[in-house]
Every structure is written in structure tokens, then in C-alpha cells.
Image (cartoon, rainbow, N blue to C red; front, top):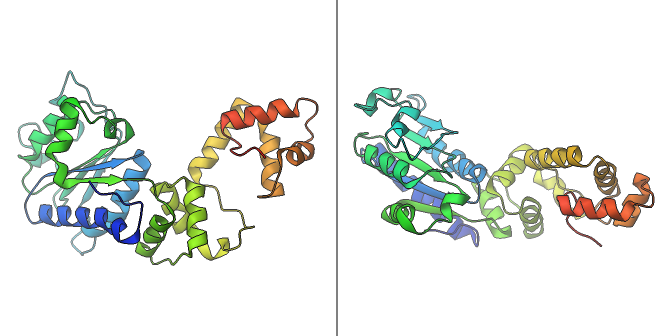
Length: 283
């Protein structure tokens, strides 16, 4: 396994492993690549960043097919191929001509029998490799049948750990973006080291705007959805979090409560906001 979170050189190791695996597969050697990630968004970001460019770099059309949202069932391990849209007797019939790679994501709930069925099917897929994305629940299972499958494919296993500041700089470099140490550390803290969230912000914003420590970093789409869920769960938390955002990074909860117009129960609202995750630091 490779850890991509500690320095720029090591960040390149997972990408290099993926590149070698895909190019071997395009040359006619099918196999399974396991991506162990904290969540499916990070794994999908890795597929988007590392795999797709390798496959779509020529002019003969797309070669990349990603299948998501699979329901894996222990009782029907043979049904895995059908869920992938492949013919059980001849899996190649189910693949669009010219598409060489089939990526299976959101496999966090895959049981050993289903994975074993998929592993066996790889040997009948000719030049088509299968990329299996294993998310947190599966990545943590290192014992039993599932652990044996992971160990059997250890040479093509890539571990995607949370990014630190140097890891963020490495990811930025892959996108042609230069980040100073301070900005990279801020971004790593802001996204909790998520590859997907970091990639989203780097692609949609100009990092030069974040060099001042007083400039708030933009929220990711996932963070906005989480805040919306919190607001629905507790409407009183919304004015408090909005007040904190308006005041800025040096906001105290007391100031925010005053701006939000909270009364005697301000302390209770602050406690609930912290418990729900809307506010993460109490000063």
C-alpha cells in the first residue's frame, strides 16, 4: 500500500501505481485495482484525476466507464455481472466497444462472495481491467475473506489517506497550481484532508485569493449540504452560524449570539450548534 499524504514525492506513488496498472491493462492484462479511501468521494476524485486522463488522452473516443451505486448481495454473487450490465456467459458482450476500463465505485458494502465473483469474472474480461473502489467500511476490514482478497491484490492496492499541507501542494501541482505552505495548510485543515473537497475548491476557485489569513475559504458543496441539514434539524442554529460567518475568523460565540439576537438561551443554542457540528471551536 502507498500513503499519499505526507510529502510531494510520495503523493506521486499512488498516481504512478494507477498509471502502471491501467497501461498494463490497456496492453491486454486484466486485473483488479483496489483503491482504499476514507469515503467514496475521495476514491471517485482519484479515478477522475488519475485514471480518466490516461484513458481519454487519444482521439479514438472515451474508454472509461464508471458504474456507481451497486447493490451487492451475498445471496446472489453471480448477479454482480448482471448489475454491471455484462452478459453472464460472455461478459465482453456487455461492454461498449472501445471502452477498456470498467470502474466499480461505492463498493463499501460489498461482501466477500460478491467481490470473489467479480474477481473471478476479471479473468474472462479479456483486456478489460476492473477498478474496484473500496470505501471506509471495507477498507477497515482487514480480516477474514475480505482481507484475503485485499492481500491477494496487494500489488495493485493504493491507499488514499487524508491530505496534509504538503499533500495538498502535491495535488495542486498535478493541476498546475502552485500553493505556498500557509495556504496549503489552511486548505488541508479546511477540507479535513479530503481529496474530493480539495480538488473541488482548487478547480472552482483561484487560490491566490486565499493568501491572506483573514480571507475565509469557500465552503464545499458537501459542507453546504451538511449545514442545510443542520439548519433543518435545528432552525435556531442558523442565525448563529450565519452571524459567525459574517463576523469572520476571529468571531467569538458571545459576539455571534449577540448579532443573531439570541436571548437567555444563547448558551444552549451554542451547545447544540457545537454538538451538531455547525460550529467546531468554542472560544
